[in-house]
Image 1 (cartoon, one colour):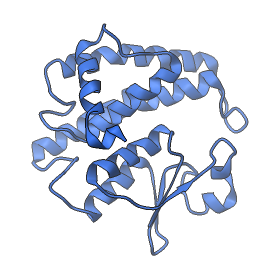
Image 2 (cartoon, helix red, strand yellow):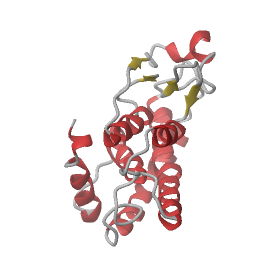
Image 3 (tube, helix red, strand yellow):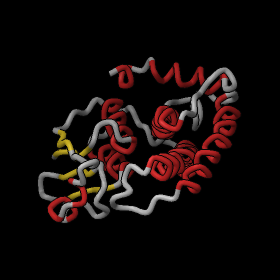
Image 4 (tube, helix red, strand yellow):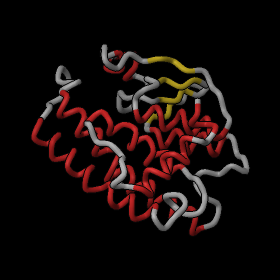
Length: 203
C-alpha cells in the first residue's frame, strides 16, 4: 500500500494528519502537481479524477478523494481512536460538521486560491472575479466557526474528530489568500492553538 501525494497540498494534508492521528505510517510517493505529473496518462490510469491524494492498495485497487481514503484507513485499521464517531448521534454530527467545513470552507478556499493566483491556468479556466467572490465567502464563513467553537470544545462536539482536521487545514490554507485568524475570533484562535498542541499536528 502506498499514498500518492504532494505533502503541502490541503487535501493531502487532511490524509496525512488523519494517518498521524491514527498512528499509521505508510509509504508515500511525491507527485509533482505543479509540473503536471498528475495529468499524465500513467497517473490518470490509476486515479479516477487525476488528483492527489490517491491510495494504491497491494492488489492494485486505487482510492481517490481524501475522505474516501480516510474512511478506508479507519475501517482497515480499527482502533479506539475513532475520528468518525461511534454512536449514531456522534456519527451524524461529525458527518454534518465535516461537510459544512468542506463545502463552505475548504473547497471554497480552493476556488479562491486557484482562481486568484491562476496557478493552474495552463490546464483550467481561471476566473479572478470568482476567486474574489470565493475569498469573500470564506471571510463570511469564519463567524460560523467562531460561533460554533464558542459553545463547543471541538467542531462536532466534545471530542476531536475528522471535522476538526478539515476545518484546521482550511484555517491554515487561507493564509495564502491573506486571510488570518486573529483577535476578532477568540474561540477560533483558541481552538487552533489547542489543535496545534496535539502530537499529530506538532510534526
